[in-house]
Image 1 (spheres, one colour):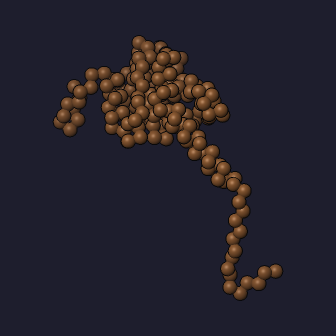
Image 2 (cartoon, one colour):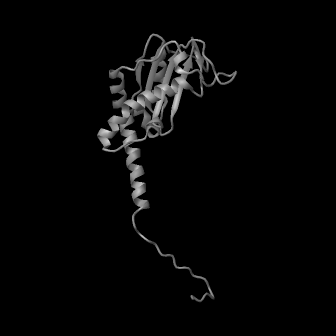
Image 3 (cartoon, helix red, strand yellow):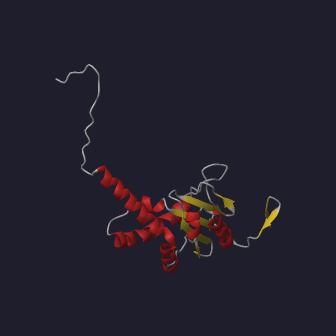
Length: 187
């Protein structure tokens, strides 16, 4: 039983917990879905669209890892590896993995054998993937849902915005500034 400000929260599982984040987001993110997947016996994963900055909510063995760690990076890498060919096909150009990652909102709940953290406060998981005991398996069906949840649209809009900025920078216009300095005679 979890209480917030004296009121009991009706959360029965990790999927319901993720849905609470979807409902409290900004007007932009409310339109976009958060996709949930049971990625193995000891893994629960959710992926949604962030507002242009990479965000994550993660738990390792029921401990909140507020700064993420190797497990979150692993999921982000798998999702961006799947989405890069999609962008190449849709936008007809290469998109950098960092551009994809900045629009990801990742939720991870996992159980890892003998986890190691960066500090006593256990904010970041530092144990590498080969020592986890199991790896998450992101199904093709889940990745297709991630593709349709709004990430592709957000990254393509950002990509077009960056292109427009580059075109404005290279517009070819030369602006001459005329200085008005009193008592100045040109040579």
